[in-house]
Length: 128
Image (cartoon, rainbow, N blue to C red; front, side, top):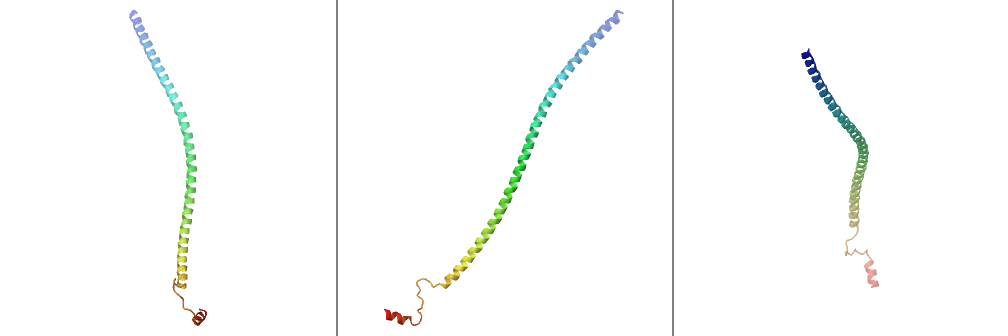
């Protein structure tokens, strides 16, 4: 019986040792779980901040895209108007040059004396 008692005592000591080791492992697990929960909470908060920022950026980008499209329309309209203006000014220049050439052909060159009508020579001699 003494032997059984000694064996029983040995088993109880081993059980107590195992139980203590299990409790330490559990405590370590609980501590690690708390750290991970805290990290998860921080990450969730960071994710919420990032999500809000993402929404703000998307809204800003939508506004900027709309503004860019408005600029594109204005630029396109202005380029079209400028092309028409250049075409019109070219046409005006061509017409003006043609008209100037026609008028120039109707006027005598400078310094040239026009032939006097008949009978004006006699009147000029009588006055002179």
